[in-house]
Image (tube, rainbow, N blue to C red; front, side):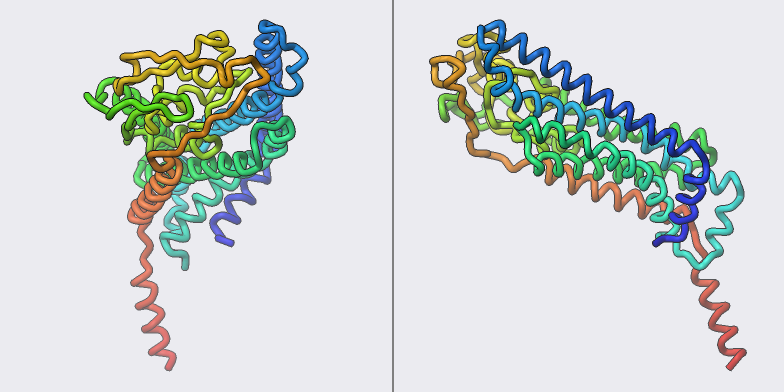
Length: 373
């Protein structure tokens, strides 16, 4: 294992701060899970009882509750990563510089890459431990139904990839910063720019850069659809990638509980040629009445509105799931590749600021070997 990471982890776990923070994290995650469960159960019961189907709460609503809890947990984890990782990784290298111990690492036999990777491993190891500690909570939505272990695994993969990217960017900021305060501030600025700045660009691209024509509208499985449009800002946003990886955004079904993924699903649905406006009524007839659901048509997404009857037309017993074919590739592999590329680039730039006199050490060794011979 990397010696820098070993030293950092030993120093971190010698104090009571780490186990206390871990306990607080687990309690907070448990409270979030319980709150999501109570919210999902209350919403599903009120929706079904409003239509006189209270007996179906334990059957139909269970899968919807499972999806709601999983989506709420994953969103909570990625937001926690956004706020925790910059503070952990942003102080690593600049902290050594302020304590005047960075020179000791630079003159050691470690390369710049090993120093930087060791610092990154030590910063992310604790964050990954926090994520692992919440893994048992992710079993709850699987037991409720509606989600699979694949959804959980893909969601956690995207959360970890986001943590690595933010940690690498924070390492680069820390390597070039002159003070701890400046490193932490710069790390959070870059993180906000990557995560929330791309969301702002996505909103602008979503509403301000709409094309004139998206092709003729056609019906597939009773759902109006056109040629769709690519939203390039969505391909680099970690939250949109998380939503796409941990769910099937174009799987239309009736839901007793509205998922917190809904705003991001609208973006992914729009890429596949479906109307983003009124998505809640399309996927959940309970939100707007049995026959009030609909989807926007005529290419402009929002300029027209086509009523969509309840699946099957004869009540809850006829609930079906529509999963049309994709006309564009999934967004999450592109997002994952973007995060890995940014991570590699940030780590490379960080090594450029951590200069190690490897050439001089080799020349000294060579001369000593020649003298001894």
